[in-house]
Image (tube, rainbow, N blue to C red):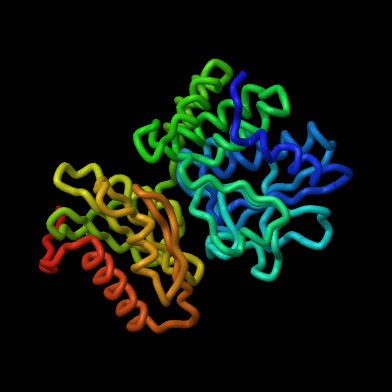
Length: 341
């Protein structure tokens, strides 16, 4: 019998859920497939082991075409954090996110009861009554799957498809920050998943505005030796930040990318790398230090800085400072860039 890492904490989690009528599951703002799969997976677990009713909430929006396609396929009702009365719930959980990271709309004064995540652990997380944080895992969905298997919960086709896509998405089909646990999870889930839907999710439709932002990202992209940087300015879809950072990394001489954009009063930053000498998470924390929050993994990271009424000129200076810090941290001294196209 396979010994899952979740086994040791399973009974503690079930004990916490016991006799609890309601559970609020909070995802990060602008949730990705891993977050959505985890939320639905934790809901399934809570429903089965304790009969607890669950509500799933997030801030921001679901903008990336693939993410929207998965949300539609799951057909799950998602609530806005701004519409939630947090005091009405017996328990509050965070999945694929942690308190204090700055990328969730859970009010800062609320300490979640449950935290399950695969990002490096934050001090605030240790205050939770239950937490399972495994920074070596490629996806939080892998952790959730271990709990479901230990509880012997039957995983339906939709949940299997979501968990599988969540793991594949976060690890880029096991090519980024994946572990043996992620590989085993994919091997387990694949026979139960809807392969046709996986294909359709990957081809998720996008609005016309997407192509305008894509055009802006390419026109604004500047090459600095092995790094490409682009600034999108004000955007209507925050998922474009990470999507453009992913896209630009495909340029054959590029090892680092950074993309920024402004959404709902925050400057959002995404970086990606193929360089194994320095972690993207380390770089992100360095460039937002003293201004905002950030985190991530060796190959990818994200951050956010509140603009709090900054003028157009001060925003431009902040953008330049972030760019300067990024180039300095990744070791690029020549700051005379050239247009990508």
